[in-house]
Length: 276
Image 1 (tube, rainbow, N blue to C red):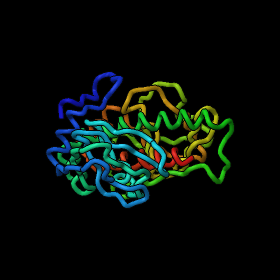
Image 2 (cartoon, rainbow, N blue to C red; image 1 turned 90 degrees about the vertical axis):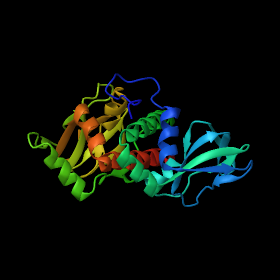
Image 3 (cartoon, helix red, strand yellow; image 1 turned 45 degrees about the vertical axis):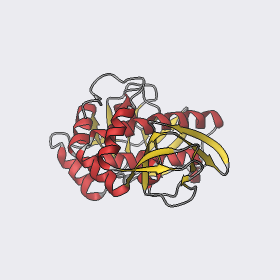
């Protein structure tokens, strides 16, 4: 998919409606939605994401307006990625046309066009950066220790083993307890996979996450090439696998499971941030 060139410096807007239309059109099924009809309902199970080919769709949560999706945009992807119920109700404001793509079809489509995962990653990261900024504005102190979210197992055992053997000349790096791995505001050169131990993620001196073995951090800056959104330090002695941007892009394109695992991790992180 040559329209998506993530080897160039970060662009102000990475989303392309034309790219999405082709991706959904080649792999999904078109559907006409009558005015006033619900595409999906809050708290219902959801295994289909949609490209809105024409019309507008209103998103509501608890009966309150949340957003308006316009033609050329994607909706419903969060439930497909996380496996959780819908977080909103989607209702056609007028007659609409959508192209639906269920979870299995999405995985198969990503295998054929892995670069599309990069665009979805960029979209989720843009939302997550906004959610984190709003979260920081809304509190002035750390979360209580028992409410700090813990993440891990972004990659299953087989994929984690594959990653650790993918770079034979780059063994995991040891980081002693309290050692700083990356700093908020710096340029991002690597993403990291926690092999063992735990890593503390802080933003504006507030703990926002603890990453356990199998978890990742630092991937946001590799996708959108923005400055680090948080500081990472070793909560315990730990070993980390570092992956630079060129290797990251190569893995996305050669190993669809890698990209899908990151998409799920970011979608879950975004949902958890919104809940907090």
